[in-house]
Image 1 (cartoon, rainbow, N blue to C red):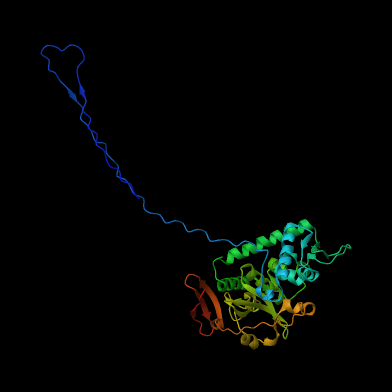
Image 2: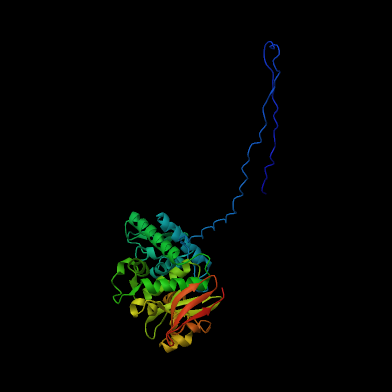
Amino acid sequence: MRKRLTPVVLALSLALTACGKEAEGALDTTEVVEATTPELTPEITPEPTEEPEPEPAKFEFNPHVYSPILAERFGPEYWESFYNLCDALRAGEDTFECASQEVYDWCTEEVILCALFPAACCKVCGVSDDGTVPFENGVGRIYYKMPKEEFLQREKDFEDMITEILNDNVRTDYSDFEKTLAIHDYFAREYTYDEDIFDHEDDGASYSTFVYKNGVCSELAIAYAYLLMQCGVDAISAGSFDIFHSFDYVRLNGKGYFIDPTWSLWSEYNTDHTPLHYFLITEKDREIDGCTIENNKVELLRYFNAVLKIDDYVVSATDDTYAAFRRTHFLGMDTEKNIVKLLDLETGKTREFHYED
């Protein structure tokens, strides 16, 4: 509420009389001091100022990434034990609580660490070389393959790198679709294909992909899926064993799609825009590429088939909501109006794709 000042006028009348004796015949005078009204400066009401918009929330590193696709085959005891391992690794501890020997083997397997905790891949293991028992009475041992202090620094640097990538390219208030597209564009711009799969063998596949920004298809697919999981998107690497090629499988609004980050890299095309030919595609699109439906499988499930008897690891994608992306390049995204701007390669014209959150 604004306040007004009410001026108060003060009339001052001061009668001054002469001191001492009156002179004969002198006039009796009284000095009158005229009252004055002080000038008041009118109040200036400040213009209302808009409250500054709060800064958007920032991503923080999530050591407990989660894949509902994997969770359909691996129950809560696997995830709880694995997260115990992740917390122990971040603290430099030597043991962690674990549900069983089978779960311990799963948690310390390189392919799981590569996909879900990349900095530990190839740097810790569940195999003893000092005669100790790896798992006993609900406790699993951690065997570091590098000095512990170096591992802790490696892990911290990795966390900082992932956090920076996310905050530079994605907002926390993005929808899953927007996160998936924004990270796809980042990946296509920044990463290159490296034909020598053994270039960084000792570093761990997805870890080295982030550090060196290159890799083969399997490494690129695991790294892209990991960034999506960091954002809370349901994603996992998959592949076709007819042509020995890896890509990703994601679920948006309960529907499955394939994404191929390798075949979207700028370095593989003469372009300065991200191709969307292989973004959120269906089984039919994969068939055209030579990847048959029967062989589009989740690689982590295939890997554990022999041990855990997981036979059903084929993934399906039939929804064509994003068919408009075929033969287009990505020009930009307006997340306020839910519009993706595209360059149509057949017409050479720009057009818009409207989406729902």
